[in-house]
Length: 272
Length: 319
Image (cartoon, rainbow over all chains, first blue to last red; front, side, top):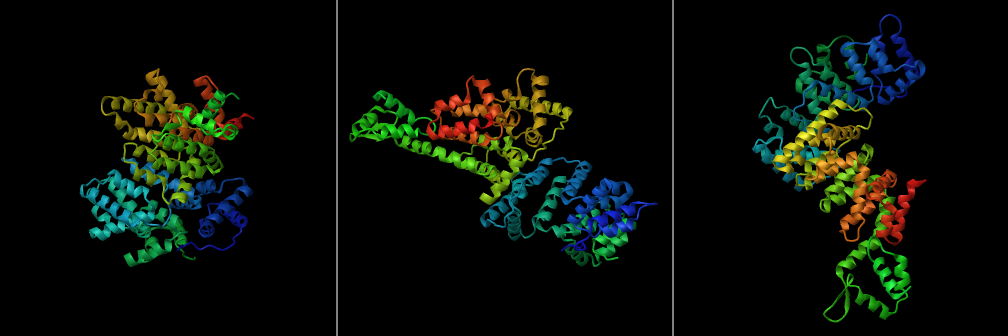
């Protein structure tokens, strides 16, 4: 379930005018920005951008970029984009930041257009689980067959295969993929499997690591909150609470501050 | 028409691509049993002398006739289909009949990014699998990696080309070909850099690589001329960089009397799939390369309604 709270029929023109007002005068009225944008879904946000452009002949996104700064600006920028554009920006940032030694697996993951049906071939799941097992036994983790099975099969089929693996060998396959802690490929493979198998659990882990320890990984925290607020952030919150015995809202409030904190809490479903 | 002329016409009506329906009707329809027997006795191509003293249809030719009668129907059905369904069905057929690597490469490399993505979607609907998983699963030869990569591409379609990188990659390609030349040539098909460059770069970028390869590196040969020992990579380069020349070559090889059925099917496939895209340029390329008009070649080799349909499709761009 989503955590985003938004009204049914807000007026894009009124919102655009209110945002314009927030930019005027000394400084910026960040609270107004949060109270509007933090309560609009993607379609509503797009209409606001169009209304703003129509009224003031200026790109709202560019204006926000210039008015705001820091983690708050990054979060608002990612939030205001269309979901597809947002993913593109996140991908581009990630690619530029990380050296990619073995690109083939990642290219396969982003290019392959997986079949979306729910049908499963149990015999195939069985045989492909065996193939995975053989590869793992020989420590041939980036064997072509491993890449083929994980990157080309439909999600439902991959899950069936991984379940078969678990049933046959006692633990989830990720337990057997921990050989070399520095191997980027194994990290990528485990992450892929976690995202495919239970992505909410995966996101909870990302947030937990972002908040744990000294400092906060704002990049990851923003990414998860912004990309899941309209989808299943509520479920991720529940998992977080169960796992850490503290509500996610409290953990976020403890580790962040200012407008950035206020925005995240709004997206997390807090009513002011 | 003299009897020998009629024999010739009828033989011709049964040869080549499609059948000459009018000739068959007007000649065969009026012939008495004796005339038909004379024809059977005289046609070594179609009839064989059975041990029990009668002239039997050669089974192979009856089968071939079936293909020839169906050729128009198949072309019409293919032409009427949505391009996505068309490509999806062609991909499926070429995977399971052979596999016909050249057709898989042709479709993956000559379609626009949107057309290829559409074909992949249609494949989901028609066959409950992705083309990527089917090719990855069913192809066990060295072609597999290249094919999956080409089929899953969504290439940049814009005009920006980084010429410095294109030059570098032309060098990379040259190095890979040289290294492959000393050892096992088959490895070139699985060379990571070759696959990366051919399957991810935009077509404009690849054309820049093609140009630099000829100018900077060999000074003589173009890239596809260097790849005679690697037919799959050669086809890939040709489809990506010089598609109209490639298609004109496919047509020339298939518009013949004595080629196999799979080659004959190329004629319908190429003409139907390119009629609305670049048939004009293909005709020009054909004329430049072979010195005659494509329509004349079709007149020579194809028959009847099938021939008329092909010529109609061919003439579409002319207005």
